[in-house]
Length: 421
Image (cartoon, rainbow, N blue to C red; front, side, top):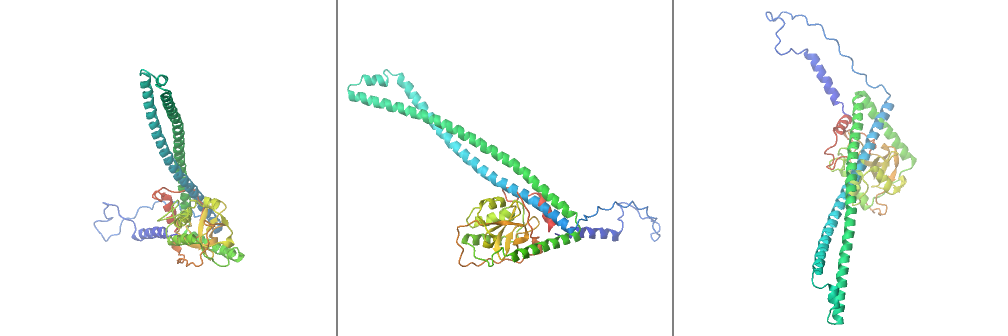
């Protein structure tokens, strides 16, 4: 969390105090006839401005709990947005397929209508001829010719009946497809409206984080960071001592290794809510993209990753597995081994390697339960964490950004990120 804006404000204020009041444009010296004479007495000073509101006096533990609660609400909103974004993409695809099916059905219907019209004209022209097909059959020269005429008449009747039947069925199918296409479009419009509402909710939550950070003194920010680090270290020691993690790091599957290498290559890229790369990520955007690049499609959101992927006990974790956090499954990271994960923590932080106990653990899932671990695996090099990456704690979310990967990410996210660095 940077203190540069505060230092800059203090320096500017000090410069004004040293330089003294600046004369107004066009003002004359106090004693133009005798420059050496003392200046006229200065007017009485204006009343001192009201003191700025005091910074919060809450204990550091309470401040930290409040800040983390705000982050959790923001991530819950982000994951809701992500879920709506995924549903909207599926809705767009369904609407496209329905429209294509409707176009084909209408083309078939037009063809059947044209054929039915031609047959109707032929029948009309036949009734206007001197003899009907049945009369010609009765007046045929011999029984065989009569049978041939009868077969032709029956075939023509069956043909007309078939055309009318297909015409009826095509009309029914086209009407049903049109209704489904309209419903898909209405669903898409509903999801788009919900997405906009959720986008505004994310912005509001991040603005609240920004306001709280702006209200804290540099000392409070430092103490918050120290308390957060101490809490994470204590939770990590407790988890390692509990024996709940594997005693040794195993090898991943081929797909798990590919997912791990992809995630490691993203270290240092900024967290942006709703982002799926390549320039920035949120927590589930990173894990879903890592496994997509490994050739396996998994759900977009952390909640669906937890709900749909097979669970795996913590003591059987292997590199590439997903570690899920918080009671609502609103944060996720990718297990590296040695009690660490790669994750995109929260706004203001960057993709980094973190202790697995940086957040309250919910459990773990495995995207490739049927995969066989490799006999040998050379893990990708992992840089040491730096302060510029931000802290390790994540937060929960339920929303996502626009299709062009955060090109419309709200200013609130950037403001919160700047304040949190």
